[in-house]
Length: 212
Image (tube, rainbow, N blue to C red; front, side, top):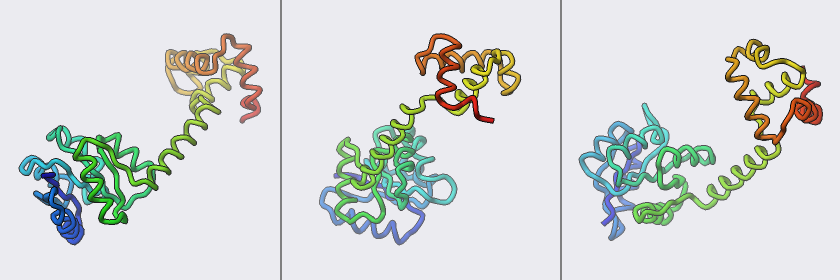
């Protein structure tokens, strides 16, 4: 039997989910919570296999609470149930330790399937949202490959190409000389450059020396 704790700040949503999940022979709702704090207390007492966690709630969000909840109950799985269909929320949820992410607009069978999947040790993402997440990550990788430098590194590169020393750059950017040296080393490594002349050529090719 899969033991589920339902966490949502709306009582009507909790009631609907309880009815949905209790209708399954292999699933039992063992508790409810209306906030992240309550979810932690309920997890301690009811020891659920899966916490069905809302994201937007009073106080801390479901994603904020997830790491602490998992610290309290390492064997429990968190399945995020959210209205937020932005891929960034999915990344945040998984980074916090969640095992799944399903949208509130999902059909009943999808919610049930997601509960079973994460309870069995798997991971679940709404298919359409998963496709958007993959596309967003691919776009980010392409952008990073096209320009591997951070904004600060581009700034340091421009000043180096203009002939400034590490000490001068440190003063201009209000950073330590050591930090300026570290930025320079990272720039050389990322761009596979070996000399200041290489830096200047790259900066010219990127149009950095024309920036004001």
